[in-house]
Image (cartoon, rainbow, N blue to C red; front, side, top):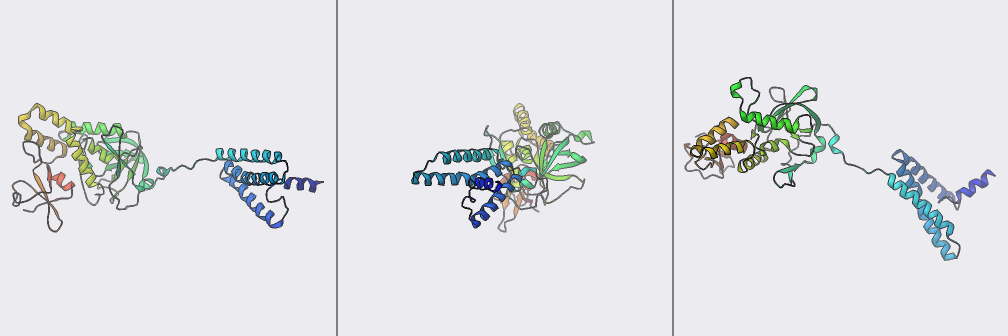
Length: 348
């Protein structure tokens, strides 16, 4: 009796209907595999199990129709199998790429500057992370110290690579500036309590034990560049951490050209005192970056950047021995700006 029931059941299962040994072996292996798919999700198992029934129901309908037999039972079997297959497909989870969740430090690979995409307001480009994004360290900012320094969980301090904001928390109060307070408030607004991603260059820490890192916001904004581009910092290049030096110089040029942030404050002062343009510009340079500014009456930089026949980048200050005979490839307003672009000072 029991064997008859099993035989009746097997005749409805593809691979067992003819009771041919080799077919039953292959079918058994397939169904075992399909059942094992339950470990990955019930949806995977249902689609795997129902697929042979869908296929063989179609084949059976075609055969019966050609032979003149009724196809009603085959149609019912087909729709039941199809329903199970569709249900399994709906229950199958989508594969998602969560590559930002790995919390490792980046490999030190010589990548180019981040590619950029344009925001909806078509003003500031937001860099798209490089392929090394999945190797950045995910952290939470617990406290912002000033414009270019903050703390993360565990009490670790992080110093932004390649940027320098004016002083705001220096023990010597005379060194703290209005610009520094503005930059500090900007960083607190953008990073305070936020989740960010840290990327290492060559150096791990500075002499004060602070982690040296590039920082990315959760929307992939490259914060080091963004800080300069919004006029809250100057580029500050210290080899060997020079991966994005060119990007930072361009960001500063953008900030100056568009009177962003602290440059806008300087522009307002200049408009109020047009007779003191050179002095105003130099004062702004001293307060902002702690370096002398070389500009003419129109605000154009006077430091000449030249590339010699050996490919060396050298900048010449006004009054230098070779200044008048130098044909510049670039003009700079401060020595810091020239150094950030990779130029060294002329020895004469």
